[in-house]
Image 1 (cartoon, rainbow, N blue to C red):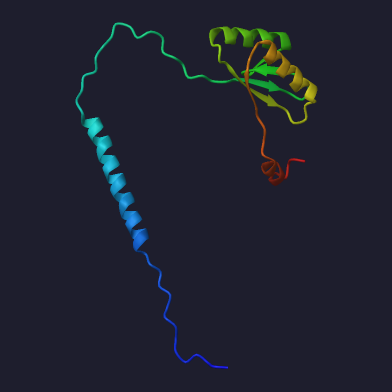
Image 2 (image 1 turned 90 degrees about the vertical axis):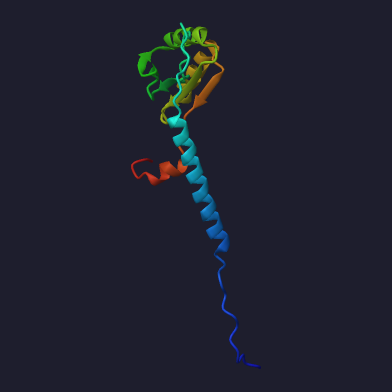
Length: 145
């Protein structure tokens, strides 16, 4: 069996591409910072108008909470099924694209959640989201079963 008497070349790590990328990032951030400074330094008098109308408020989804005992809250205010339908229908008349986020207690019988979903359907709400918690987060919490 022949033995190696010469030593192989050492492995070298080529850092040139990484250094190039770092320099490009530095140049990018320097140029981007310069543009924002230029925008702030522009002396410009904006035109004025007599009236601009009503500004559109950003849409916040309505939060519907269903507790384990069947209680319902809309945006933190207790209500019943009929009140929920009325309030959601009124909100839909104001803005046709109302969104609802449903928070249901994990220990709640599904019938309560189904009744709440039916109330949203009755109010003609089409955009409904349901909040959940990731199972991995529940397993890592020792207080949960």
